[in-house]
Image 1 (cartoon, helix red, strand yellow):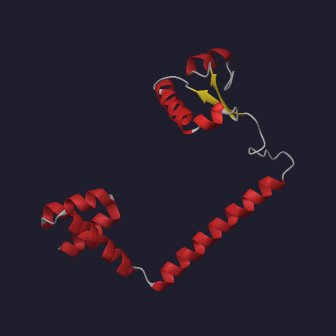
Image 2 (image 1 turned 120 degrees about the vertical axis):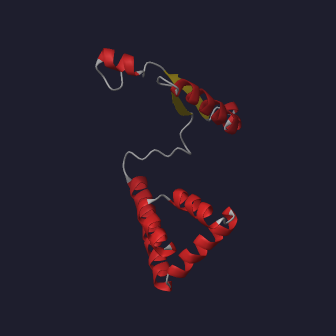
Image 3 (image 1 turned 60 degrees about the vertical axis):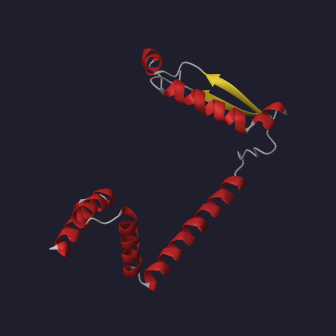
Length: 142
């Protein structure tokens, strides 16, 4: 019965639901269950599966490095190390956006305080990108 239950959960339940159901049915501690689940996953993986995963990851990294080189060789490439100042536009939008943008800006200003002081980075607020304003002007970016 446990095997059927496990197969059902793996096909139709999220991992969290599966964990919770096993905890309830077997009275396992969460740590024991997590260790069991990952040990089972490792046993299922064959060396061939691991090699395939490594090869796939290697291909992804290589593709991204090639993409970066292609962007660098493009005529409109911007070398941000040479650009002064780098202007960071802060768009609050509407709803909870202004609150999130304000906290994000506060964090960025703290992280980049040396660059701001040296004039390498500048922050600017971009106003008017609320849904109401965009609809009134019939433009995605007024």
